[in-house]
Length: 115
Image (cartoon, rainbow, N blue to C red):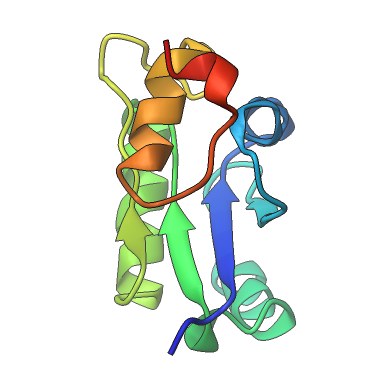
């Protein structure tokens, strides 16, 4: 069953960066940092996350790791997309690097970034 995919990122700059690289229309939601229990439940309910293919793409820093851990507990079926720790932030990751990470999870990316 191919459930509709959704990507969870931390901030709006991450979302913009993702939209720039992706060559398909995928829903992307921002958490704006770690989530309280209520906010987490709202997200799960509002976006029907229990019944969708969820991908988690967060910064490789303390707050990103904390958020990743939190999301993993609430959404055990979610898949993780990792960026190289050298870049620390999704927004600071070069487009070709981000494109490769997305490609590894079978997303369509703009060919210009696959150099």
